[in-house]
Length: 616
Image 1 (cartoon, helix red, strand yellow):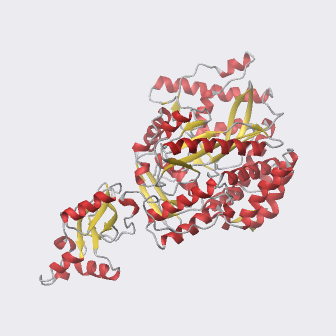
Image 2: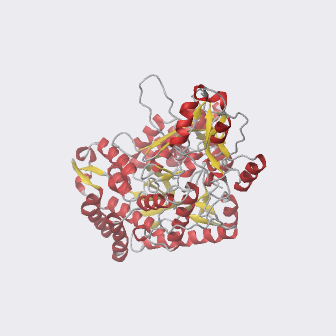
Image 3: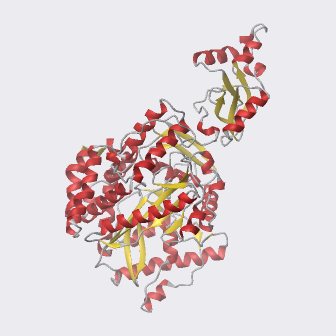
């Protein structure tokens, strides 16, 4: 749960004081380790559930602050985007029916949120990336007006020195530039926490890194972004690029991203991990701090380490080390940040049990990971899993092995023993790990989404297909079915409730364009080959400067040698265009009023789509 009352550091004295506290916090952490003051005799688990809010048309619904006020429950907090919320679950001791307790609380709080959302004609949804998010929903107006988010955005933009670039290649490709960090708000996750004994932290952390790829491969649930089929877990690429402050350079130099897997096995103690992150990542946020952490220890107290925790909250390791204080005792934990929300609450609890079981069942042969596996193999496994999901071929024990074989034959037995060792109820162990086994042999969340979206696209435009896909996800979640039991969606032609009213839902995005210096002979051929009647014309900067239509070309037939003319000589220059957020009814009225057969759809005067009478 991030600290909200912070500011971007712009005052030199404030920054200097904060840095002094940060250095003292690291020293205080080392003192706690040396004096063995950490709570190491108990293990707790905890989780954070990020979720989406959607309206009756399955579109992002920006009412998070309104819902927070109405729900009035400290378990809930805001998120970066105004159509997201976060639930902070209570910690439970790792034993007995702890996973059932987490599950019951999660279901209860999700139901509570959904009840309040329903009063505003909305719903809550678990989705790694909400399929219906469009460019409109990543604009600045969808920022949650909380000081931390605004300060973080401004600091990252200043550090970047310009806009953020996104380039993700999968089956399709996403390639664009953006002027804020709100693309990060597309990502929602189920963040899992496990308390780790201080003396075993580094070995546990390295093991967490080693198993990250295999665990992720069976949990992928984010294959789509804005109608593009990208990675199996697109969040991994999107999160890094949406917060990437590294600047391109003519010099070849290593630059560490703020979001990442790491670059080597951890050594020493947890303090060394924090030192590395402080050394490699500039301070983004500050806050007034009165506590002198070293003095607190010397006087017999336990410090909160405010500066260290604030900086740690702006460095986004997929396995993040965390320091906390509970009941007057300090503890350490690992926060697993790479697991997406969904597909169902039951799937998430199964993922949780699988990961915790693996962590606690670590074979002794993996205590020193540096002797067991090359770090780059672990990192390569993670990236491949994000790209390929369950279809990944891993490197494990220096041999190639499929995800299915690795999970079923090697990792599930380890997880089973780990949970058994912690005295978790046998019924919960069998119930939850069997879900992982059946999903491994069956269908994962990303596979269900892709297969159904491809089927829907055969009869629907992207906007309608994405809306029906989201509707199907919500209905299955409502029944709390694990994803391997989800049936395929039956396409419907009903549009009143399943489709939004903006032209973004019906426009053609597979856009053919011409350059004003092209020749008519080529333009006519392209239109004939592809059976299209309207083509937007761009200048060298990609701006809309004209429109070429079949009817207009036919009216010019009397001109001699038409094919030898350039497009700019014959194009219509007085072009009416609209924004993707334009209401469909309004678009139809514009076309009727001006007696035109199409409307280019533009963002900042650059064509992003086109709609015609046929589309309407």
